[in-house]
Length: 140
Image (cartoon, rainbow, N blue to C red; front, side, top):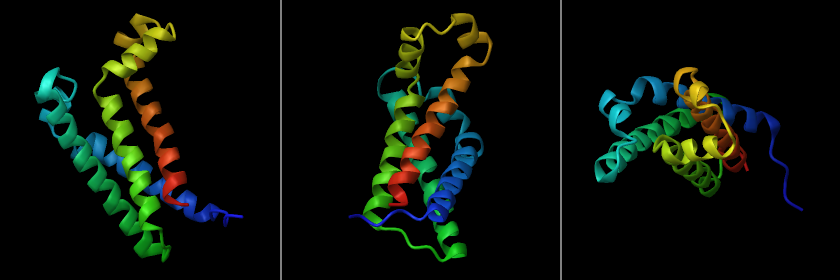
């Protein structure tokens, strides 16, 4: 039987990833990345990839700081898997079209999506949900 993940490790990893998300999504991301990450074609993909790269680097720094302070050790393979899930899910959301299609399929109000902050709320809740999955993998 597998060894259970320590709850403190899981909590510390999630906190680090969540803090990194907030900093990377709102402070580290450049205006160019924010303005163009959802553009069609290679320009949009490159802007989004650049954002995801700095986002992931911010997560690595946050995890390293957490490990240094807590003395916790993480398995490199599971950490890489968790960071990969975070990066891929972040890229999907930030391209905008996939989330918009999901919102439309679920019958979300266009007025709420466009003027009521709905797209931002769906984007951020998507990110946090996947950060939890990432934390579960990373802390394994």
